[in-house]
Image 1 (cartoon, rainbow, N blue to C red):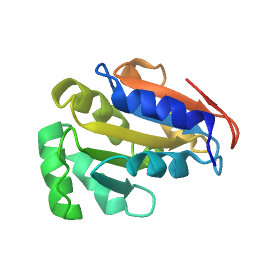
Image 2: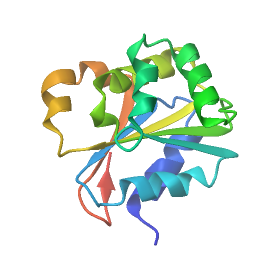
Image 3: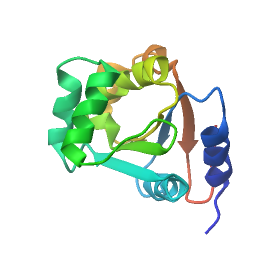
Image 4: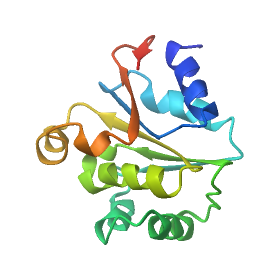
Length: 153
């Protein structure tokens, strides 16, 4: 099924001014499915789910140094995570606000790494604790998914 979001994701992938991507939306609208499909166009898709595998969240707790985080994720996943040819996909990022903040540092220090994250809207902890304003997300592109068929930037 071709969705409107596929066009935006491909544009994001090919952009020379690409930021980390944060996809927000209700549960079960196809956010994860769409990013996985995008991942098929990379040499490597590295998916970490912070809800199902909370051990990955520990990587973001020590500090937000993206080089260190990348090294630790390589060790934990056994994947290469090569900037320019890999997609790092952080699913259920709303579970750990420090991971949301880390998106900014990936963009600033490793801009050639494609980083995408899904943020389900049901969790209030992120809205109240981490993102009172969009200040932490200024170095992220955002796509909001409202239905299974459509997403808008």
